[in-house]
Image (cartoon, rainbow, N blue to C red; front, side, top):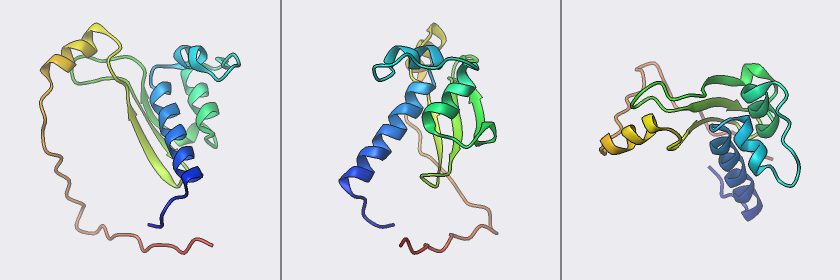
Length: 127
C-alpha cells in the first residue's frame, strides 16, 4: 500500500468521521451539517447514501439504527467504491441500553482466520 498524501489522509478522516456521525441517523447529521440543512428526505438510509457519496442503496450493505439490547449497538456497513473499501461504523453511546453495554465491556482479542480458499489479492499499480 502506497503512502498517502496529506490531502488523501484528510479526505479519509473526513469520510470515516461522516460514517460514524451517520450511525446516529439523519436527524443527528442535520444538526452537524456544514452550514446547510441536511437533506432528510428518505430518512437514515438516504442520508448515508448522500453524505458518503454511495452509488445507490445497494452500497448500504447493512444498518441498524436502534440498539437491540446490550452488545447490539447501531451500526452501518457500506461498500465505498471511491475509496475501494468496506466501512463498518459502530455507533457509540446513545441510549440507556448502550450505557449498559459500556458498563459490561471488557477487552478481548480479535481472532480471525481467513477461509482456506482465501488468498490475498495482488496489489494493483496505481497510475
